[in-house]
Length: 255
Image (cartoon, rainbow, N blue to C red; front, side, top):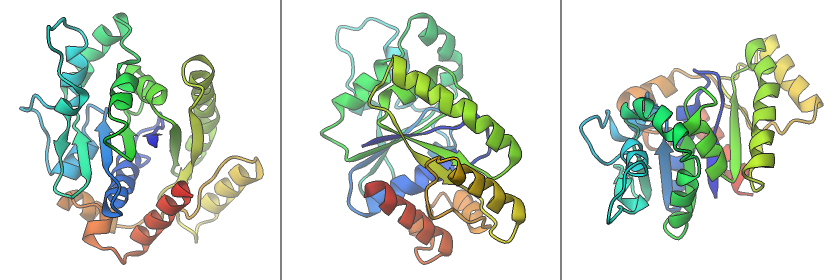
């Protein structure tokens, strides 16, 4: 199963959700790949402990080779690295992604990621794609390549208003490029159960029939520690409330 984690708003937890769900998949014995398409490289930092700016094994290098002729193209697996955790692999981000974007758009390389992940179907049980906070070339490539779309929602009114446009964008990709793409669910992040506004906003989404996943992910300083240590929650504190919520969310997606 291939999931894209998508929201055009920054700071909603895309990289956190991507990396932690992937770490859980790998921890449970599933062969798991993370593809980091955000030039900021937050998932890459999280899973590897730092940037890969000097490496030629990255998503940028993968896309760059689609722009040039070669007698022997590398395979998709040549752009993937191991992480410190068993079963968890990564196609790292690279700052060059931003510079490559207009060239890739003009040459219409929008299906190359889909083709690469289909090539890797026998090697991985789960794929999670982290996207930039914009509906750009890389995000569209990810939506075209994925089967399920996870939408982080951070419980404010701006996110609520943007959600409908975001769902329209997903439907457009479904209609025009990827009929197999489904909205797997809205992931409520940084939820504060004692505050009235988050409860009200989430209930309104449920009342409208939108696919809100449970449990909601709690707000916790522990996740910042996890980022700083470059250690997903399942490896840092398996018994923590947020880890248990992530595990339950992963179980719901698997069912």
